[in-house]
Length: 442
Image 1 (cartoon, rainbow, N blue to C red):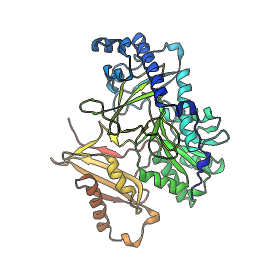
Image 2 (image 1 turned 135 degrees about the horizontal axis):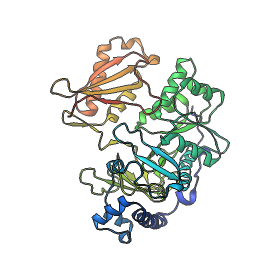
Image 3 (image 1 turned 45 degrees about the vertical axis):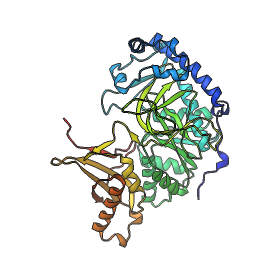
Image 4 (image 1 turned 120 degrees about the horizontal axis):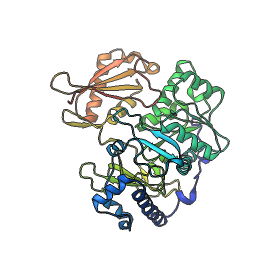
């Protein structure tokens, strides 16, 4: 039985989260005009980009005019590393964050005090939607340091007036002790780490449902509805999705409400567009494509038409929760890291959905893509779930064939399935590494 109570949820800023679309569009236009002028006058990169495109700030007369402005990408942020995209003077910076840089030069963003306040407000909206109140305890198990996750969750909890426990990621035994002995009402971390915590409790003979958690917002990696079901069943909580990225502001760009039908974008601060990643043309409402964000109020490092590479769709219908802000669907993949194997487009999410529906398997898995000869090969390493391992699985060869068949039905090509013993595949204390592509494309 879930410990989550729907009557606990509320709308943190109804004036902004429930405003009419007409009023919202007027606000967005004023802020768009202001941020384009601000960036043009304070960032040489934007001035050069817009001059070359033949567009001036005064050409932005409607929201649709945003399409006159060129897109920017992560490559542009890397070319301007570390601080050539900052618009505010250095004396106004109060915090700097950075991506990990695992795929190249990291992208760096400076935040002013105003940016921090906006960030806290956005995350607070998300935490309110899961039921966080002033007297609650929020355990923040996202990483801190240059990563935005931990800081954003802490700012949001403190904006509400809740007690934030900055546990950071890792040190799982201590996390378990705190969750049990210094009871938290809510847990914020990656969904894979939350599952790892649940599994760690079970290994000690403790039912995770006995931990007094009521809910949490989980993000910083792609996850599926099946992982949500596992999290909610194991802890007896409401697990809601939060989205963000360092380049835009961090977590809180959008968050799911308790209805769980898409993540509400803080549209008064972030203007979204959906484009075809190949043609770069705007797509109609409801169609899936790459989401592009413009930060309307950020002053440290505003981003204008930033291509996130994340694939999603937008739903402008009014949500049952009462908010009027547009909702983005769960991220289904990335336009730049989808796997192309044997000429077939494969998203890791498709494989994850199969694995998560099989009770005989644990949530831990890895996808290894290789090219041993001239043909691509996918190996899916899955782990047997100790609790659900029964004699019916004694014929493991048949069980592997069953898994392989289900995955083939999902992605259209055959895979090699390898079974691993319980608790033998790597766990992550931060973002889970699910895909290892060993192919040499050089």
